Amino acid sequence: MSPHFAFKGGVELQGNDPLFTFTGFTKIIHPCSNLINEWLNFESKIDPKDIMIPIGDNPKNDEDLPLFNGFLFASDSTGLYPAIFTKKRRFTDYEVLKVPGYLKYDRKNKEFRVGSKEKLADRNLSGPYLSFNTMNCTSYGEGRMDLGSKMGQVELKAAGNILYFPDSDSTELNLTLSIDFPFPNELKKIIGTGFENLEGSSLDLKDEETVKFLTDMLDSTTSEKAFAGIKEDGKFKRLPKEFDKTFVFNNVKLSWWKRDRALQYSGESGLVVYNGEQILKPLSLCWN
Image 1 (cartoon, rainbow, N blue to C red):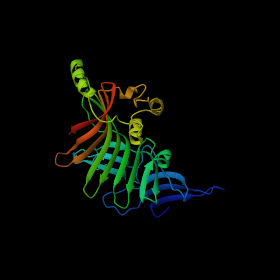
Image 2: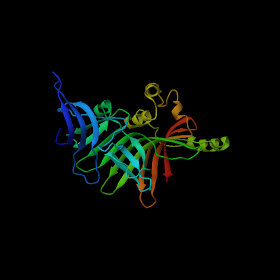
Image 3: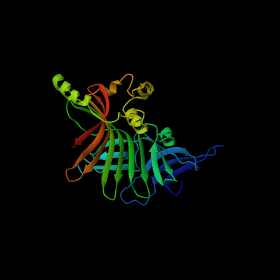
Image 4: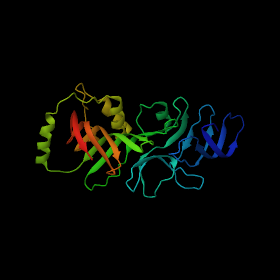
C-alpha cells in the first residue's frame, strides 16, 4: 500500500469509485528491533493520499489470534511494555491502556499513530491515543488507564500519559488519579485541617493537559458541563460525582523501578480534591 505498510490479500475496484477496497492483512514497516508486529486483519476503502486503516474492537492476526494495541503490564512484574498490533508476551499480562480507532503514518514526525479520527486530527482532545516513533523507537500513549490494582475497598482510577524508552527499557507516566476508600470521620477532619493551610499557587483547572486528563475520567456530557461551569476562583461550580472521592491528584509522575519491580514517585503533585472538597493546591508526595 505504501513504503510504511506491507499488505497481503485482495484489492477490489468497483464502478466509478476512485478508491480501492483492501481485504486482507497489513503490517507496519519500521527499523526498530524492540517492537515485533503482527499482520493485522482489516477490510476498508483506502485513500492512497491519506492512508487510515480501521482497527476493530477485537483485532486479530493472520492466524486468527488476538492482537493488542496500547500498553500492557507484564504479569511477572518486569514492567510495562508497548503493544502495537502485537500478541501478549504472556497470557496473563493485562492491558493498562487500550487504544482503538484508526492507524495512520505521520510523515512529518516519522511515527505511526492510532486513535479516533477526531483525536488524530486534534491531539488536544481527550480520548485514547498511541504513537510509535520510527526514528528513536519510543512509544507514547494517553487516555484512561487501568493500573490493575485490586485493593478491596480501595477504588483507584487513572488517566494520563505514558512514555516508553527502549534504550533504557524504562517507562514514565504522568497521571491524574482518583482514590476512594472509607476511613473514620475524625481522621478525615484531622487530615483535612492540614490541607487547608497548603501554600502555593492554586492549580489551573483550565490548563490544557489538566482538562484533557480530567475529561478522560468523565463521560463527554459531564465533562462539557463541568468545565463550562468553572467559577472565577478557578473551582468547579459543581463537583462532578466522579471526583467526589477521598483524593483526586493530578500531575502524579511515576517511573518503573526495575530493582523494586514497582512504580515509584517522589515530588510535587496537585491535590485537586480531598474528601469531596476542592483543594486545588500543590502537594509533595512520596509514592511507591
